[in-house]
Length: 67
Length: 438
Image (cartoon, rainbow over all chains, first blue to last red; front, side, top):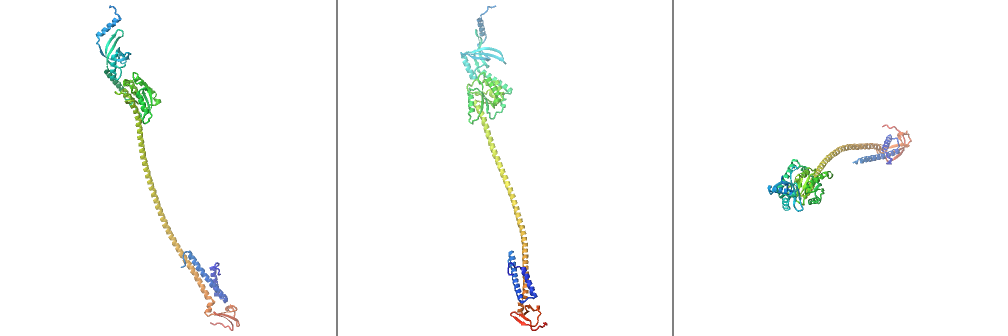
């Protein structure tokens, strides 16, 4: 999931939602939980990043920076 | 019966009778029927009196040489011509009878003034007759050719006047070419009139062949005497009746001859005739030159006029074109302005629409991004909330048996319990199990 070129925002979001559900259900061990949290927060970062980049790209394409 | 006389006796008696009964001399009017000079200088004549063509009286006459010389020279001096047959004279005569030669008149004197008057009278008669017959001005009715190039000349080839004429026309300054043809005639003496008439007839015959413009009768040079032939009625008639205009150059200083009067134009001398012909050429040339100049002027004027017209037309065309071009230019400018303003409006409109779209789009993007951010934020919060570390920091702990959350295990005393805090992992054994009453 860390590969940027194969990064899919939609898939990442689906995974994050899935992890949130898993955490809500609380049926995993601590070790698994920690790993899931860690994965999810990384995906959130990447999604944020992707979102920012996308916004910048679009605005740049329309001749206006996100100021 | 008287005894017969010898012929001599009779002739002597006749002589005596004539001498005693007749005056020594008489003035007699008679026509010279015939005159001839003798080798000794005497003149022998025949005097006649005629009525019409009938002879009423006739007699022989003589003038002795010493008398004849005086009479002849005085006569010629005054009348301009010698004594000749056909002339009417007033003569002082004595009647003489010679036993051998018979009756004759001895002419002692001839009054030249009578002949002169007689000639004038005859001349007047001829003139009157020509007038009466309408011949006097007949030849003058012809229009003179402007350029008489083909000229029939009646003259004597030996006459000095003829030489003057041909010399003048052949060597004129301007180099005009005059084609002349000589019709030879005798210009003096009894035969002159007939000879000239014959020449006129010859010209008439050859008129078609040579297509003459003019007939010229010239004389001149030589004796100033004996111009009577040019007063001849028949010649005058012939000249009047020619089909060509006649110009005379008879060359005499006295009154004009009848030939001169009936001719179309009369010149004093053959040279003058030549000059007259040449002046026609000159006038014509002058006229042509005048016309040429007129033509030139006219042509120049026309050219100028056309030039002006062309210029005016050109100017007009230019103006029309220019105004049309200007009109088109204005139209183009107007169209351009219209296009510009309308396209400007359109562009503004589209730009506005685009701006609008852009704004909307940006808003949309921002809202989508915001939504996503919020979603992410929410998920993040959920994650934080659900992170086990959050519970540990609040003081909660988590216990598992054999790696499984307690809610999934049927717990019993003696089970090994693994408990996680924020800082430690505690392993303990379950002593007892009580229901949580809270």
